Image 1: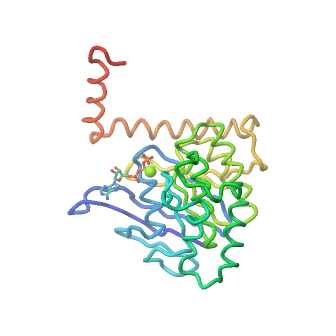
Image 2: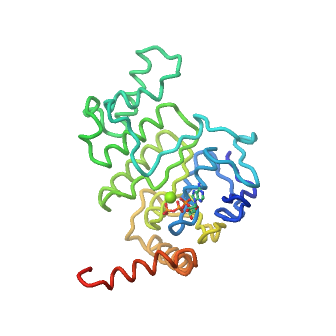
Image 3: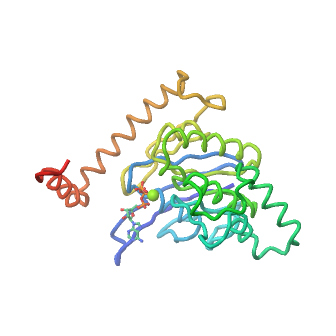
Length: 272
Ligand SMILES: Nc1ncnc2c1ncn2[C@@H]1O[C@H](COP(=O)(O)OP(=O)(O)OP(=O)(O)O)[C@@H](O)[C@H]1O
Ligand SMILES: [Mg+2]
């Protein structure tokens, strides 16, 4: 349904800063795919390429047999930071996504309420974002992305800023929404347990420049339990592979300057 074919992305005048090296992958309709990789390896850039916020330096992205070049409402992105309009209520934030739709007011209202119910926030519809917790704001962002009925949801570490119990709760909510709406989801995380909990398939990216290091198929029954033997075994395997990539990140010469700065700082008297 969505394919990346030999995708490269480099930055700089001579394209000499390579971020994505050569990524090919296919996502099936309704599949929940997780992208896992060490910090700075190019996960966000990969989602930007799929959303067409950026163009690949080489290669192509194809959705339902058509190459994609422009962002559109079939590929909706949910960002790590909850991007809501502070001057609009929860209800108005979601309604805004239907701004260009030709639906009448009644139909729009029904849709907004349907998705507010799905994320469990209908009683907060008249609240302003500043009164909501981070997780609640992220659920509003999810409802706003879903209300336009996109085919693919691109989620960039949506729960990364939240504590682990709340993340688990939001993960369960997302799994339920995915099962009900049958969306195709590409979910970026650096948490292997979150990836095993949610994914049908997990792609492990290497340290920058990113290539696909390994693909794991998660054949565990849902809802998954992190104490199950199969879960624990896969988690150990992924953690081992991921830590190898993290080692490369901290040995990267471009990291050296900032790392030595941190080390010097921590040796100064009175710190730590
Ligand atoms: N517009 C840009 N120009 C040049 N380099 C960029 C640009 N955007 C991102 N990069 C670089 O690309 C690399 C990958 O960035 P990206 O944000 O995709 O990493 P990430 O895997 O999402 O990391 P994190 O887990 O910390 O969110 C980084 O080294 C970043 O500095
Ligand atoms: Mg990122």
